[in-house]
Structures are given as structure tokens and as C-alpha cells.
Image (tube, rainbow, N blue to C red):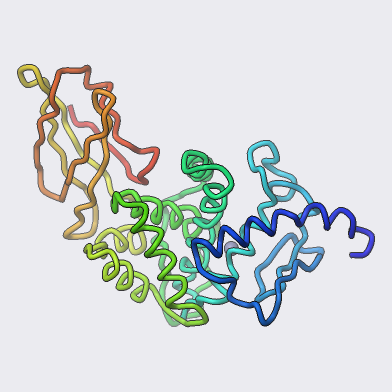
Length: 299
Ligand SMILES: [Zn+2]
């Protein structure tokens, strides 16, 4: 609105580094021919191709909330992410709306990583984690114009955390960023579905990520690491397995022990590993700051 012009000129400066960051990781802004616009509206925010409804009142955070921790205007950063995921890449059925919301929510953390660093992005994702509910599968029923589960945000925050967890298990950030970029550019201006995403990430990573995607998308429960630790001579013996719904779920997992990172490769059967050098088992940290999982120690 004309009376907000001065405020907008200053406040909308954050668009420039945001677009640069998204172009770096998701490819060129998909609607150069249409331009990019933030259009002031009474409604707080909504994605529309090249014309974002903007109603966050020129504040950081979201509707005036969380100003102290979010260093940016949530509506600008989130709704702009939808230009890539939602407006350019579009799900063929609302059952797969996670393709819009999970990648866009993950994109918020990508913006944080661009502006600060990976640790800040992880802190950002962890701040959203309490909103994950695990009450329903993220993918809804197809063919019925599914409109989401009531009071369920899992296609946003759990979906973003699924992507973060998959990034971790790849153990290769260059590969992760390349796949993300190639995914976004390969399917630019395309209509796709969940199978498209899973097939692309499996093919490009050379890893069978299908059971991991499926566990997070088609089941409500998180994968749970069941484990025991006991002293064995001068070392610790750890036994572990994944408790989950998907056969073949074998996601590698990072631990911290004796101040060093250790990777284990659990599957759904019990396995054991020796962690060298005795240390109090309480100081064995499973890296739940970077992975979205549950853990249960059985002894
Ligand atoms: Zn959204």
C-alpha cells in the first residue's frame, strides 16, 4: 500500500539475499517472465505464482511471534520458497502436498544456512521440531481432493526434518546440494508425485532411499533405534536395531562417543558393534540433533 512504501523498501531488502540463496541451491527463479512481487493483503500470507500475498505487517517472525529468534520475515522466506516448490514443481494430487510444504520449510533452513551457517540451520530446524506430531502419515489418501489432516503440520516440519535426516545419512553435503539442485531444476514447471521424488533421489544418490522416504511419508511413527550398551572388557558393546514399519529400513546413524563421531549401520535385525575405550554409557550420544528419530535404551 502507498502509505507503507518507505517501510516496504527497507523491509523487502531481505528478498535479494533470499533469491540469491534459493537460486544457488534450487536453480534459477522459475518465473522471470512474470517478475517477482510481494502484494500487500489483509491475509497474513499465501503463495501465488510470482505474486505472493503479503500480510505480515513488515515484521520479523510470523504474525509478530518469535521475533527474538527468527531473524527474518517468515512470510517472505516461506512463501517465496513456494515459487520453486508448489508453483513451479507441483504435486499432481493434494495427497502429495508435502512436496510443496516439506521442501519449502526445509528451504527456510537453507536460507538460514546461506545467511549464517549449518549449525544455525540445525538450531532453526530444532526450534520447529516440537510441532511434529506423528499422528498421521504425511502422504494422504489420493483421488479425493484431500485437504490435510486436522491440526496436523507434519507435511511442513516432519517433512523438512525427513530431508535433513536424508542429508545426514548421505554423509556428503556436496552430493546433497547437487541432488537438491538437480531435482529442483529437472522438474521445474512440472507436475510430479511422491514416486517421482523418491525415484529421483534414489537414482541420483545411488542409494536405496526408498524405505527411508516411505517410513517418514507413509507411516505415522518415527523410526526408533532400540539399543543396549554394556561394558565389555575395556570397551563398550552396543547392540541395536531399527524398530519401524518399513521392511529394509537400514538408515545409517551417527553417534558421538569419546568426543568422536562414529557411524553405525542398523537394520531391523539386532547387530552389535564394539566402541573402543571405556566411557560411561551415559556419555554415548546418539545424534538426535541432526536426525529425526526416536531412541529407546533397553538396559
Ligand atoms: Zn507453505
